[in-house]
Every structure is written in structure tokens, then in C-alpha cells.
Image 1 (cartoon, one colour):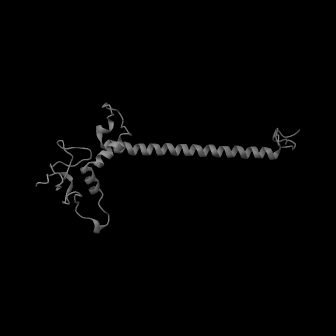
Image 2 (image 1 turned 60 degrees about the horizontal axis):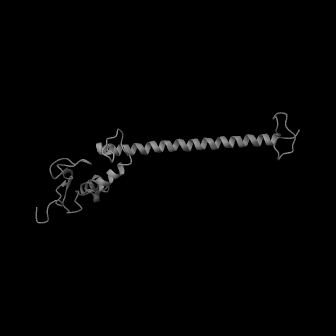
Image 3 (image 1 turned 90 degrees about the vertical axis):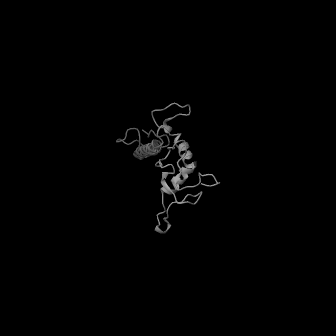
Length: 164
């Protein structure tokens, strides 16, 4: 009797019903290759899920800094969870505000000792205290003070040009 493999004309092996020894070993190799491929795809899918969870967690951590703003939908309704798609918009708003730019510039001082200097406002050049607003309140990300954006203590950018 011939092997079940239509391309093979060898006699079947008594230890491997229906196939000759060479075809049976080829089938085992193909099966093992397919198993390895399946395991590789599972590993890739698992890593993708771990990455997705990690980056979603980073966005959630940033969103928590914005409080209720990160939970408020465009229609004004409050959601139970952070709206991850809104977080980049909130970060952009904070960064574009003058106080946000000053806070970002002052929050990461240069690491080289010769480059460390007292923080200065990029607008007016005055030495500033990036942690205290000119109204005396501490500066916190995403928080306004009495209907104004925080302006670091010492900054003159917010005064009229006629004089202080």
C-alpha cells in the first residue's frame, strides 16, 4: 500500500498508519512549526495587551492631575472614568497658557551646575518664583486663581506697559 501523501509513492510504514516514515516526519515538523507560530502570535498579543494597559495607565495618571476636567464630556456630563481622549487637549491647554509654559520651564532645571540659575520669566526677564502666584497663592497645574491664570511671583508680564 502506498503513502496517503499524493506526491509520495513510498510504501507505508507499519509504525505510522497511512504514511511512510519520511512523510510522517515531515507532518510532525509542520505541526511543530505551526505550534511555534501560534505561540509567537500569542506572545505578541499578550505583549500588546500589556503595553496597552501600561500606556492607558500613564494617561489616567496624567488625567487625575486635571481632576473633574478630565471626567467632563464635551456635552458637560460627568463620567465615572477619565476621558483619555480629552487628556491631550487638557495638557495642550495647560502648556499653551503662559503660566503653564513658565511652570514647565522652571520645573526641570538644567542638570549641569554651571547652567543652574534662578528661574527667569522668558517674557520680561525678571527673576521669578515658579511655585507662588503673584496673588500669593501656590501654583498648582490646572488651577486658576480668582479668575486669572497663575503668574509666577516676580513676573511683570501681566502689568500694563504704562508702568507697574
